[in-house]
Image 1 (cartoon, rainbow, N blue to C red):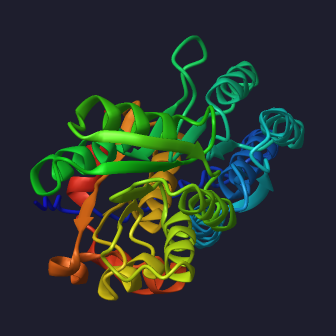
Image 2: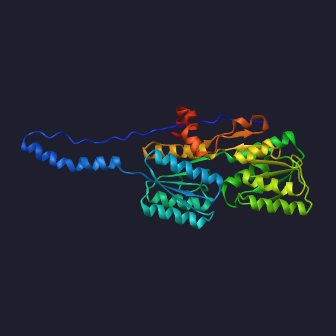
Image 3: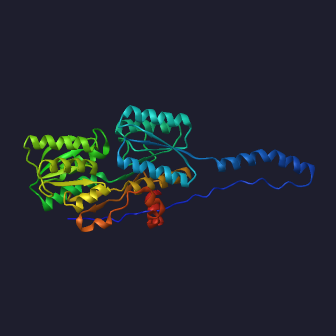
Length: 352
């Protein structure tokens, strides 16, 4: 019923190399030569001390994404980076505009949580044309020209497969409602496609709820009002799961009357598991995902070749192994939990 994949964590540091001008000799000729070489040495030193500017384009106002932004900002600051965070508000046009703004600012690298697969591809092409490396976190563009430097993401196809196969085993005749994510975003598409292609029961309803608690609440309330028969609500994140729980609770349902399953391992979701409202979640912690994204960008800036896809490992959580969940708290993660990282293993997953 449960499958736990070990979480690989790591910490990497780069060392700046500072050029030094040769010592001047006491002869006039050597002094003149040293005077000529001094500007070049000064330029090399300035280049070595140059502040690295990183732009981070966030998909929208979601707690998961906010944790990612905080990790990237704080971990970047630890490395002396100047990080600019922009938000796309789930709008493809704004995502492209944000990337154009960062290019105009002359950033050294761009990190993105994609709001839309097609706009992410356009953004990638623009960054490539400007010669700026780009690293995607959580999801990337549609396949085609303009391949990103790398994508660091959870295996969302695995989420759909795992939940489907688990229900096939423990609740094979379940009538399932899908509270989906955002239309056109690859994360939700991968979950839906892989759930529906593997689940042997019946999907009796589905609707885009845009990662939103309030939209999921309204959707489930409407289903209850219509007397829709349902055994399981698959909410694609735990904010949506909380909306489903609220709708059920307000209509007299008790924990376990209708199963709720979800993704991400947010503390809110862990509480729902402990209270019996949620049965399972597949955790892709934003703390580890964003941090590995920082390590990937660091490697790219150092001139190293990185893999096109780096997986943020999943941890399948139920009441039986709730202690395996990874912290979502950026301060706790960057202060202590990052030290659990296996540097050799994570760098092996990053470097080509």
